[in-house]
Image (cartoon, helix red, strand yellow):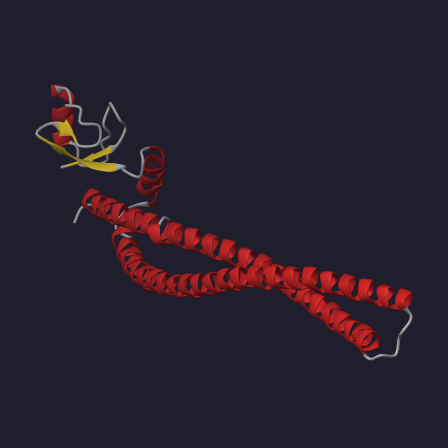
Length: 235
């Protein structure tokens, strides 16, 4: 096999190698995973805020319950004095009655606040449950997509390794000088350096070779470059 035929095989392999590298680098699963991880982070951050709200509400509830218990104890003492017959002075009795009414009003206010706080907690707990459930779903989906990406990447990497090995075999049939030229054109021409001429037309730039140039091409055994795009032409 001639040097140019070997070079054309190198080009064919490089085309496939570049495609595989592009797939490895820009697998749609990577972008999908990035989006899923972003949603998972947002979910986790919101859950942290909700749990902080719940913890704060729990402390408020405990404080209200403590205050209500303290009021209950004080109210019991005052009512004991009021109805126990220990106090007979009318003025003191009126004072006790006013104190009992005040304590009951304050207790009612605190119990209303406690009820509102507990109702608010129910909503926060429900939201926390939703976020935990969503977080688990996202984590499972991320794990599934990561496994799929790993399998796809492994298959592509395996195929890529085989192609690169085959490329080395064909490249060994090409001189260093021609390989250097090939790689220079490859970098400058969107990874396409060697193309066929079909019916006198360069398949790289799709421009028809002038008659005399085409005749020279047909008679040339070595490297021949398209005068329009500069690519190496082969039959």
